Structures are given as structure tokens and as C-alpha cells.
Image 1 (tube, rainbow, N blue to C red):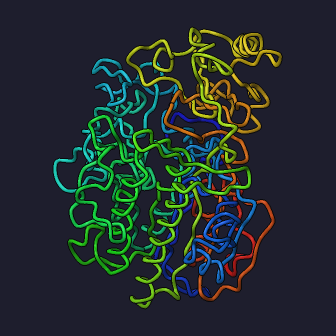
Image 2: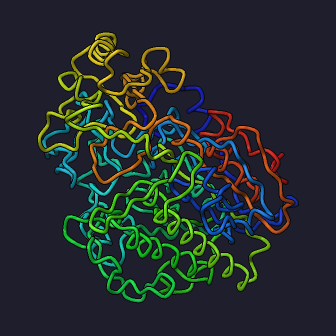
Image 3: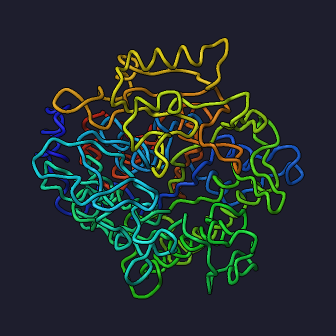
Length: 576
């Protein structure tokens, strides 16, 4: 944890003196020896209800995710599960692996702001301006936009992130594109040290377990925090926002990915998320990594490796299926209605993920480790709106004509301002996070309310959080010791369906606080479990301590669990 972050001092000091188990424990009455954690990004609870039970108008009303339904038959299904708030991928992932919220972990968004850090030495791939002289050791910080997405890759256009050799991972990160810490000699802040707390991967690794994780950016090696990036023994991260390329040896069912099946989305301006078909090829890279790891190999199959104690991946296909408009093929994702009937494009993505999980289950069984593996399936975030007809994107003509950051652009740091012609822009999707530089919070809120009043709500504002309303959710904004340098001064949640992303290729977005953003599926499955449905409200942050309890490790080895009091999930047959 950063030495200059002074808030919650007592809790942080407690964290620094508590130790994790000295040796990996396989006793304590638990039969669990392995945990497979899967995030189906965007997968709502209602998506799981519909696919496992069937819904009129799809597949003749019969279930269309047979493998997930089979896992539910020996699983605990949590219907009222909430992700992190904001519901962005970065804080959503960190909730899964730390047991904490942005208040404690410090991860607010892929692209956010930190008042205590300085800009990178070189400009990031997405436009966070850098300068070798922008940081002076020991000097007062200037503050900077923080970026933990493809922009910190050596070369974000390449699938391996531009790593000098191999398929990337942490070697794909360009240290010169990382923000710097003037309180630490202007050292680059790597993702695993940007997060303020430890993770389940660090606890399991320290206890002697072998760990592996696959995700969509090299920057998501934050799951390895803290230390030197080595708490995940096998980290794989093909860059999702790279230019799509042929994948020799990869296929989705009988469809080869060499060449890619959708040749309308392989130009230099495309990413894997621009195609319903190509995203399945991309996700299959990570599915194959899981299969290799189950078979006792490294993620690429290159050499023998221990079968992981803790491993997993994220799927991107459902998230793409929920929001993509693929104009070149006249295809739309999303839903047919408010009850979550998937369009054919989304249906194909859900079926792909289900088949892929079935392949993992088959591999676990053939390797004789299915019975002692806990399978945990949830999502970093949901997607809003499910009722696609309510989607209202930001446009230059009504009904929504501007965003909170646009209204307040003169009040923002230049790196966050929409007026910056080369910058990465403000932190806005279906939420708006505002860090101020030249206006008071009170005056900025007044400007929002007067510019976009209820009677002429040109920014689609639903709620404005500031002052005490904001500190209910996060630490107070500001610089230490009184404030948290990462907390925004203002957070705006728009009306349901409104998004500020500006994209014309989307039907939905995530990041906000709406039910469709935050309510996701959660299923814990093992052959020894009696099936049950839990109606109590739970959070994805409870997955982290539950995984440690399942492995016979102390959930309070996680710093965020101790600080926030995050409990083990209810109804599990361990850790109670």
C-alpha cells in the first residue's frame, strides 16, 4: 500500500502486521483443492434464469445453456448479487479478487484520476500526455489521469501487446507509460502496486499454491498485487483492443479462426469487440489456456506445470453480444424486450460461453479433479439497459445533448477535459466521474443542476453524488491526510438507458449504478453441493473470502476483508 495514503490509518496498520498462512492448507474438512473462477462479463442474473430455465421465443422455450444448467443442479445460485460501484471492469475485477470496494482498493475505473501521482514519462497509447520532466522526486504532485487499459501496452495494436517475446502478459507493459509517484522517487506505478490491498492470488501463492489467470489487458495483472507481479504464476492477457488477426490452430466448434470468420472487422481501425464472431475466436484463446492448465501445462501448452490451486478467466463474448451494433453485417445485439429475451446475436454469444464452460468441465472430469474443484461463475459487471429500446446515446442533437463533463469542462484537469483535443477524455460511460481542478464542488454541482434541470434535462441526469452523499460510498476526496486522492469530487448517475460514451456502435454500456449495471449472476458449483437458491442480497466482493475459505485458508488474510468486514457468502458448506 502507498505510504502517503493516510486515510483509514488504523485499518491499514492492522493490515501490515497480519500474516497469511505460512503453508498451503488442504485440511480443515474441506474437499476443495482447486478453484476455477470465471467472469462472464455482462452476464445478468436474469440471463442465467432465462438460459437455464428457458424463455418463450428462444429455442422453443427450452433451456439454451445446458452446461450452466448442469452446474446449477449441484450449485448455489445467488439471485440478488451486486457488483462493485462503479460497475466498471477494473473495480469489478478487483472486487472479485480482493473482497473490497473502490473505497479501500483504490480502483475506480480503467481510466480515472489520482491527485497524488504525476503523469507518465511518455504519452500513453490512448493519449494521457507524458513528459520525462513531469515528475520531481519529493515534490508536490500535480495529479494525473490514470490509465489501466490497452494504453499502457508497448504496442496496443498487437495481440501480445508488443512484448519483446512470447504472448505478452506483464512483459507487454511499457513502464514509461505508467503514472509516477513523486513520493517514491518518481517510480512507475505498476498495476499490481496501484491497487492498495492484496488479492486472493497473493494469499494462495504465498501459501504454496500455484496460480493462473487470463484476462483482456496486460494491465489487469493488477490481480497479482502487490509486489513484483509474480503472485500469478501464469498470467495470460491477449490484448482485446488490438487489431484482429488470424489465429492458427484456434477454432470455435467447426469454424476455423484462421482466417477470422468475420472479415468485415479486421481492418487497422477494428478491435476484437467489433464483431460477434471474432470475439468468440478471441475468447477461445483464453478457454484453450484454461484447458491447458487443467491438463497440467502452462497456458500455452508449452511445458508441464502444476494444476493450479486457483485459476480462471474472463469471457468478453456476452458483453459484446449485449451492446454491439455491427453495421457492416446489419446485426444488432442486446435484447428483444424488458424480460431479457436475447436477440439472435446475443443468444449466439451465450451459447458459445456455455459450450466453452462445458469443455472446461469435461477436462476437469477427464483429469480426475472435478470432484475437488469449486467452480465459481459470476461477472465483473452487468450492462444497461436490458430493455434495449430505452438506450439513449449522447448525441449532438436531442433528446440528450451533452454530458456532465462537457458542462463542467472548464472546471476539470486538462487531462480529463473534453476540451483536450488529444487526451483520453473524461471518465464517462453510463456514469460520470468528475475530478475538479478550478471550481468548488458546490459551484460545480450548481452548474450541473442549472444547466440540466429536471424540466429540461439535456444531460439525462438521474442523481448527483457529492459531499456527504459521496462519502457514504467512498472516502472523502482530496489529498492525504484528510482525503483520498482517487475519489472523484462528483459522481453522476444518469437516467436508465442514458450513456455518455458517444458511441454509435452500442446498445448498452456499463459503469453505472443501475440495476442492470450491477445485478449479475453468481453460481458456486461442486458435485458435493445440494442445489439451492439464495435470495439474500450479496456482493461479488464476497467471492474472494469465500474462495479462501473453500481452500482452507483464512479469509481475513485479505486486507480489504478486514477493513470492510466482507463476509463469506451465505449457505456455503465451509467458512461458517
